[in-house]
Length: 294
Length: 246
Image (cartoon, rainbow over all chains, first blue to last red; front, side):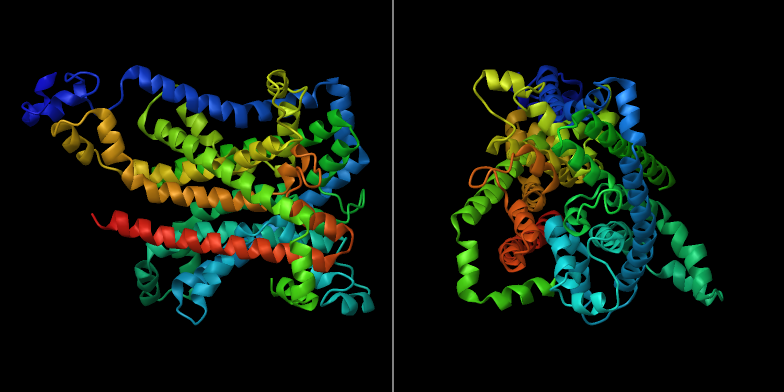
């Protein structure tokens, strides 16, 4: 195949069929492809699949009875309850905050707008431990609001409100980040048309804006929920680890693990692993629906 | 966030320097940023390979693999931590063969790198995928008709436009790794001067009610993280100019 240069005119058509030989085509030879696929899959197995499988294997290592006992343990149940409570408050809160922030950023020009955009990403770029520490510095005994709060008998740190606040903080960016690009690309034409045709503010939002961003919104909520239920670093700082009172599922896993109660730790962890699998499935489904509609 | 800087200001310059230059703190910084850089580099190389394989080749189970890449985003870090520890511990599925070769993974700096690679894995893949999907075959066809071998085409035509996305992916994965706490806390063994990372040191100081010391370390981390964030924004502006120039 030395004639590659001379046959230039027809090369593209031939190249696709591989008629110009292995090194003269638009894709790599089959064996190179298989090696690349093999290496990529080996890498993903080592880092993703094997650890995930090990969670379930370790969870059932000592039989179903030990697994079930770890789940229905009162401490585990109270951790599950607290995790659901934190997610149940922080996800809707961030749905509202995220929408409002995205709306303000894409629909209005105001001083400090760019600063707000940077601020939204802050919880992503800061260590969760530092996020939690902010609340200690604000609400702790020596903190800014600490003395006032203790005078009024309000407990935020090492109590449920602190956990909820920390969860809201670290999960704030998810909804806003998904919605901002959608609102941006959608533009204001349709909304203006609705307005001209006599729609009120709410009507315009429910009938025009929301249908256009619903998949992005749902996507953000799914990721927000996964992080809210799984957050460890920030919650660990503010919780105080009081068993049965301020322990979330991830913190309960840590306690069991540090007590060398591995079977129970993995049993409770397997609940979170299931949550992760459901999250991935839901996420793929939303992506698929979104692609079908567009 | 302003509370952090306010709290550090109460410390004064001298004591601040004393905290952040203590050998234990310096060792933690070195491990945090060093291991994060290694993990982000591993993710850049393999992320490029995974993204390429997912976009360009077809093989059974491709869609499942594609969905699986986001696992580190969905799996709580505490679960990732105990799972990776179980697998890479000297008695674990992968740790046992490794220790026969004399390599200790968990409870050693290598374990920190493994955990940070896990949590940063999706960033490079997800930054590269859209770029790879949007590249037209025109350029590759042109290179081919001009007589380039496939390897030359990959090296000279396909690869250069990917560099901005690769750098962005590296920076995102690095920034995430620097702040990571949950997974590393389990796999590292938390030995001072050896396998203790900076976020863990903050945690320890908070538990000892040494708030000023904890904030001093946090300030150093924040300043470095913000410079990384700034770099990401500059890189993205640069890559927009690159792709918009067509």
